[in-house]
Image 1 (cartoon, helix red, strand yellow):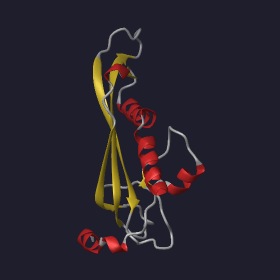
Image 2 (cartoon, rainbow, N blue to C red):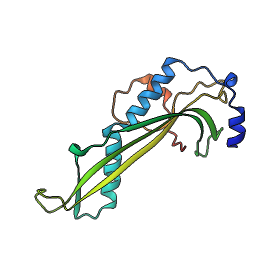
Image 3 (cartoon, rainbow, N blue to C red):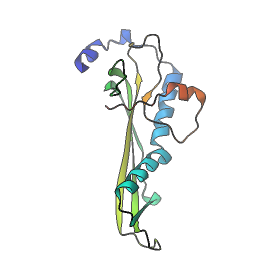
Image 4 (cartoon, rainbow, N blue to C red):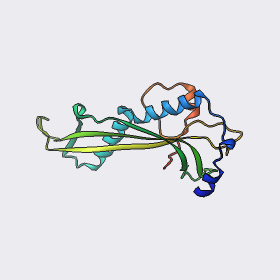
Length: 164
């Protein structure tokens, strides 16, 4: 299926993309990678995995850069109700790593007993193929959280979980 899509990815068949589409993808990528979103998901997962005797605390002084990698190519949508599982478009792979100091839960939090790194990653795509000729779609994938939410962005961002 991927090879067929790549062969069919003739630029003459791509749907037009305007500045609003590109802005929506940029806002969606920034929204899902920001420290509130990426660090929050990472902290939630880490807290779930740790025993109750340890408490994770973000180490903001040692924060690593957030990453957004853009590329052009195919991507798969694994959702069951997806009409077109393979799409072609502008892809945004986002990643944020956070270091956490781990403290004994019953301590005064003066000295950490360990350090953990949690990495959050997500994937979005702005479809450029003409598979939805009658339905202009904005970026797919990712999730909300953080940043300003205007109504136009909410309409363009769909909450499908896409994988590269």
